[in-house]
Structures are given as C-alpha cells and as structure tokens.
Length: 84
Image 1 (cartoon, rainbow, N blue to C red):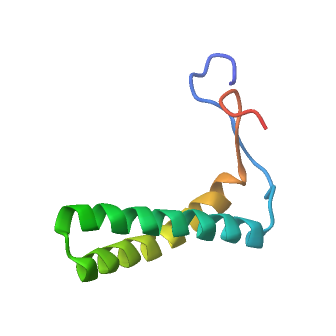
Image 2: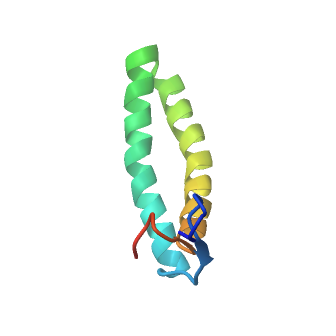
Image 3: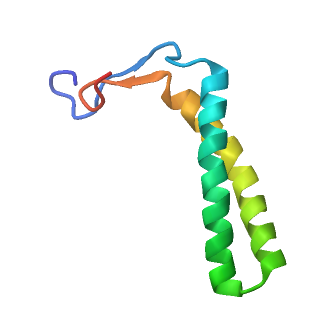
C-alpha cells in the first residue's frame, strides 16, 4: 500500500495460466457444482425434471461468469493483500 493511503496498490500483470488451463479449471469445478445444485434442487422440489433444469441452467451461466472472473483475477496484483 502507498504511504498515507488506505487503498492497496493494484497492478496489472499478464496471465499466469494459459486460457485453456483456466477453461479446464472452470469446467471441472462446474461439473461438481452441477451435481451439487441438482441434488439440492431435488431435495427441495423432489421433481427430477425440474432439478435437472435448475442444475443445468444455473451452471451454464455460472461457468461463463467464472471463466471471465478467473481470467480477470489472474491479471490483477493487489499490493499488500495478495502475495504472488
């Protein structure tokens, strides 16, 4: 952090992983989250079709947003808060 400032220094840096590593990470994580979402939806609704629709629809959206978030986060360096 800069002297006299309560905000951390944020520095832009190039990606630490290539795009396909980020995509693979997002897809594997999302697979587990699809299963979890379907199980929770089924526990609430006890409707197999609705549970599958909920699980797939929410996770398709979340996969794209997670990938974008991962790529952005990989480029930021927040001085004093995150080391390496």
